Amino acid sequence: MLFSLGFFFLTCLSFRAEGSHRIKADGHFTKYLSQLVQEFNENPTHPRFNCVILPPRVTGDKLENFLCPKVFIWCPVTHYRLDIKCPIHRCLLKPRFFTDQLSKVSARNPRLVYDLRGNGLLVQRMYVCNYNGMSHRYLSASETIFQSVPRLYSDNCFPFVMFYKLACTKELLDLLETQILQWVSFLKVR
Ligand SMILES: [Zn+2]
Image 1 (spheres, rainbow, N blue to C red):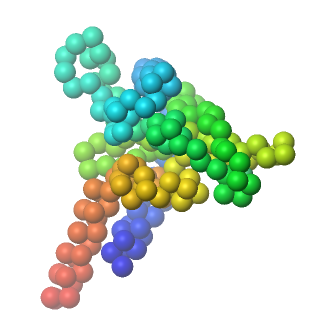
Image 2 (image 1 turned 60 degrees about the vertical axis):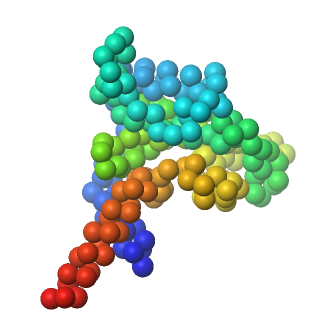
């Protein structure tokens, strides 16, 4: 029940944010995100990619990245060294491009993630099934992929809740549900 109310609230929010769910940023953010993705490609199993990556908060040579957004890169195939099969054709999915494009509005834009203390970006990986020369693909944070790695999802390895055009942290959703419960209790008392 509460989850449904939270979902309703976020659905309303998604309509309000419809014009901004496609993210476009300046060259500096683009460079910062490209660098993170490159570091992931060079060492995809590194523990720093287990969680959301915060921008630098101390003075130093990377001070220019202070205002960059939080970023989470989600590619379970390479990060956890998993084989994920296409649920339709049972052949292995191949990781291809990341949704890390910020220079223009595109289907390859990262997903905006709403959070309590500053929003962030979710970078997904596109997984491709090549079956009999006919390819189709899945985003790494799609429901199909989560169903293939249920243990990762239940263990909170993926820290967000996905909606149609946006995502939010589980902490934000918990807060919304708590607030809604308080409103409902208040209305009942009255
Ligand atoms: Zn397939």
